[in-house]
Image 1 (cartoon, rainbow, N blue to C red):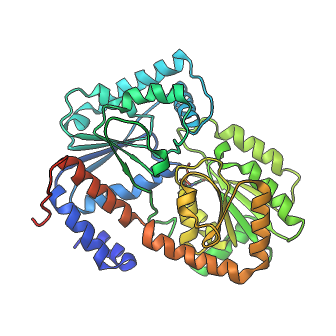
Image 2 (image 1 turned 90 degrees about the horizontal axis):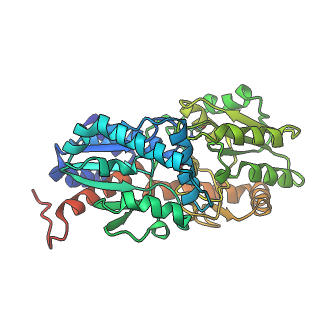
Image 3 (image 1 turned 135 degrees about the vertical axis):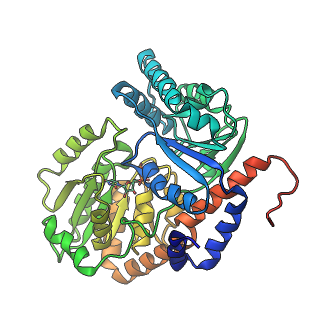
Length: 413
Ligand code: UDP
């Protein structure tokens, strides 16, 4: 068997690997292309970096292509992102024109790869029009939405829908995100990779090393939020929760994040966060490079509690990463976090800085509960949110889409 699959078997057990190998057998040799808009930063790139080599290890002929945009294009697609997650955003003609032109140019550049593929997975709105620019496609095309689109701003969704409706299927992370579309919709939750630098076990000295490296206090409880600097992640709400908790319990806060190449708003939000944290002792705002995976791993392991106080979240990989490290997570009561954090069991879901502060204090005053929730969190991830489960669902989807409405699918070959 493949060396990569052997390594997964050590974490998940052999049954899981046998199962995905069986599902992959009828798909062997198929040409699969994934397209998104950045190779670094954010959850989509994080997932693809792992999913693609795993598909490859199973014998699929898989490629990962990245759309290349320009500033007006990214402004437009960030507008889509904000509008899909519920903000009223009106996009100018010039922006939409940039969106369509960039898509036409990129689709042209990748045309032969795309038209020859057996399966194309288009991730999020950025490359959604690709399908319309590939009239001679021969394979199945699936649109994968990673965003919380439970209540999209209608005019923008109406515009995007015209690019999406002719896909063969779409994938959402949660039932609540599904939309009226004239094709089958699949629900697949994202996952994390237990073997990646971001999630592997680390030596104790490396974990302790972050205290010295970032000037943190080794004896003070540490709470952490790792996120792009984005308003939907509510970093200012985290600082507010910290301020309220520290009146009752001593603690320190790290807000760690970086930018994504397709996110033009990050710098502005970072400035706001720095300003809010300026006079606050024991608040550390860390701007990390895109390859700081081990550092994030060590920070998550060094923390007592991890926060993800998002006000909208498709699926927060950072939540699952922290849970895998045995940490209770206090997450915003929204989107994918409702699936990830089992309230009062693996952490808490909150709706306000006050709520977050209350839960922080509770956990720091009840360390046995904190540990118990953390170990349940790890088990929940092992059973539900590792890459192997994610891959299994992609393979099952591919078989389903290929066979359409046939009554029976023969998997015994
Ligand atoms: N991440 C990172 N560096 C950062 C901030 C985030 O590597 O400075 C990673 C984080 O560990 C997670 C992913 O980027 O794996 C973010 O995914 P998530 O689903 O939490 O949020 P998104 O950015 O996709 O909204």
